Image (cartoon, rainbow, N blue to C red; front, side):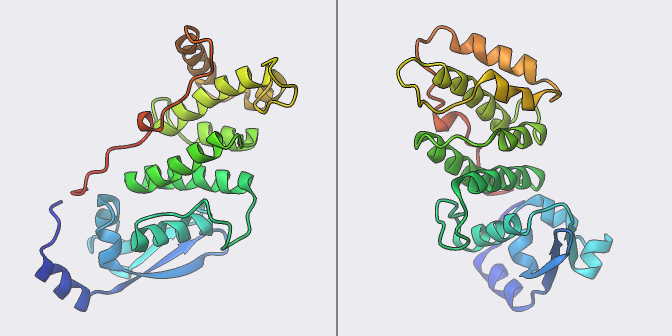
Length: 225
């Protein structure tokens, strides 16, 4: 989809309509200009096509979405960033912000928003670099919500292996990471054993845990959607 010209954008804004977005079990509602959404990705272009019910009624429903995910998405649309490192808005703990980052990444994956996914990935990477390891429940949700080859799943698998090596290190008795008992909470995830095996084999030649460079997990952003 080619971007609009300046004159098309200005005239479109003047004639634009508002879309009502309802999220969560309590159907919290937000109003957003239609053009802002359709400019975000091809998913919204199709969803708001007037041939479909949602397009005619100018309503979108995301019943399983955390309202904060939608709010960060809207913030990203307006500001071009998703400030997950800031605790000013909600006073959240690091563990919750990591879970929120996972959910934002998954929302971006479902709605073709690689730029938003990259914002979430950068937050997760910053947390790991600060030696803040996500709770196992967060890791489980990340793996359970993604496909085997997705960037988020690959990143989490790499960090699981790194976490096992960190926890087992003799350098410090207080070293953070994961142990085998914690990994039992991940039992039953399809493909996990295979993915862990691949990562362990890839990591074996190194005497240190994999550094997981962030560039390996950032997605290409196509401005044309």
